[in-house]
Length: 233
Image: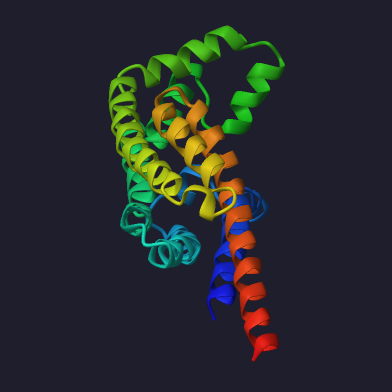
């Protein structure tokens, strides 16, 4: 039944909101290096597949609403949001490959005259190595890679920005027929336009909360309609 599908989508959205925090906490608890967690390892593949499954279920709710309210753009943008989800792990892997944390760490160790992180921390704690000097070492190792990092981020911000703006426009087309559609649409448009200055990611987070409320509300409305039909029958 439609109300069950919408409620399932809403629940998937709630899990998706907290998924990043859960994964980062779990990663730390089992002592997986953060850079390794985003490379193509069994761990990263499993977490990516779970994330992808949650995104499919979440946006399926908007595909359903697009069909019910005859808003083709909403159906299209929901499908594009699902398909584009694969871009994030791939872009993250590309960025980490370009940055190459392991080589940066090796460079810093060589400059500091140590073999491991423990020795480096001892030098910092005993003031044998100045904090400013340590920071300059890291920035020096990063400087050659910064332009590539910025280029990849700009591409990411533009692609996801356009997709998010169009998603917002499609949600506005639901008008007053769907509660929370207007604030969700406006927030997504603002988020898409401000990804490049980072603020957009915070706004998108708020927009997703509104989208979850929207799906729960539509699920309840659908259930009420079904109940009324049964009573009348």
